[in-house]
Length: 193
Image 1 (cartoon, rainbow, N blue to C red):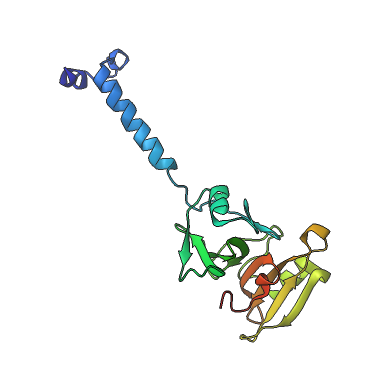
Image 2: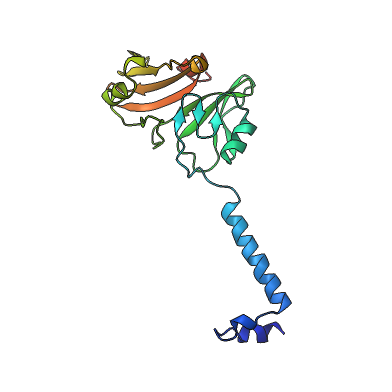
C-alpha cells in the first residue's frame, strides 16, 4: 500500500520506489509545478526600443501579433475606440503603453518610472545633453507644448525607416518620457485625444 512506500523513504530505499500510484502522483505534481513556472511569462525581459518597435514587437502589428511575439497578454487602457486606443502589458507593465490605430500598433510610449532603454542606451532620466550626444545631427529640438522643456525628435536616415520617429520629451533638463512610432501618430501630443 502507499503508506508503506512513504514509510520506506530512507536514502537506502529511494532507488526501490516503484509503486505506480506514487510515481503517477509525483509525475503529475512535477508537471503541474513546471507549467506554473511557464504559464504566462511576465515582462521581465529588458526589451530595447528601436525605431520600429520594442523587443520583438513591431509597429504595424495587430495586438494579437504583438502579444504572441512578446509572449505576454495585452489589455486595453480606458475606452476602446475603433480608430484609436491604448493597450499595455497585463502584468509587470514596466510603464509601457501601446497606441493602436485602425487595429494596428502605431506607436509605443515609454512612461515615467520605466527602466527600458533604446538600442543606443537612452532612457527616462537622461539629460538633454546625453540625448544630443547619442543622436547628434539627426536630432531636432523644439519647444514642448505644455512643459518648460523640449521635444527631442530623432529622424532616421535609412530609406526603410523614413516614416518612423523617436521622440524624447524633457522638462528642460531631463527626459520625462519618450515614444517611438510611425508618422503622424508618433507626433500626436495628446495621444488618442
